[in-house]
Image (cartoon, rainbow, N blue to C red; front, side, top):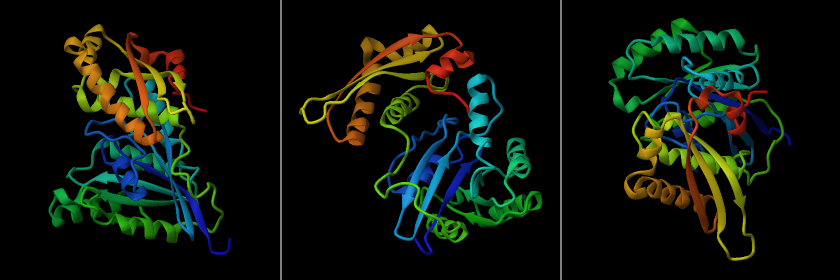
Length: 303
């Protein structure tokens, strides 16, 4: 198609910088799970915006952090492996950090070392609604000394301020090319994987800081009920590392597990457009985040 633009944009940054929130806002739909807790995203996930004249494929990546286990290693590799494969690296920085954290310095060095020579790098300054303009200008000046960015865009995803500029700037930067996905596809992530992430999101939402990062979700069975009028039946295992975590996840007389299941079922029903019978079980697997076989079984495997 003449003058049609398309391309891939990886969204990177430290944990809890607002990557998934921004992608959901740009897409106009909730595709990526969000949480106020860090390290919410564990796998790369594509979100697709299609308009008449362009298609943008966003890659939502795990937050880049210092790994403490094999799962952490997987998450960091998943994020950094995209730098040389995309048209634009969109690097998000939390402007509430007055001094640039060491982890952000490492992200910048990683981008500089691994980016393709044709890859453009946008610096997106997030959470602008939380700081004075003077502080933001100081941060931008410091960041510009570390790397020459192709674009610097200040935004507040919560207040939807500046996000329209991101789309326009991305479209201008992308090369001419075909649509890689049909116009009705918002993500190439399958329903089973999204279901798994929805369940984990509710655990992040309802439990304390210690529990959710030691949790992994396995979809054991996903039985669709097309054209029958019956509910889709989904069975899932929630793996945790300690028996104390299992107690917390179950809750008094099963109240917490019921709360997690009800909230997850509601979102899954919206996702598939039908009734869902969701059955959850809690299983203890000590140190599963360091087990290659468990990581592979739960879908964490780098190519």
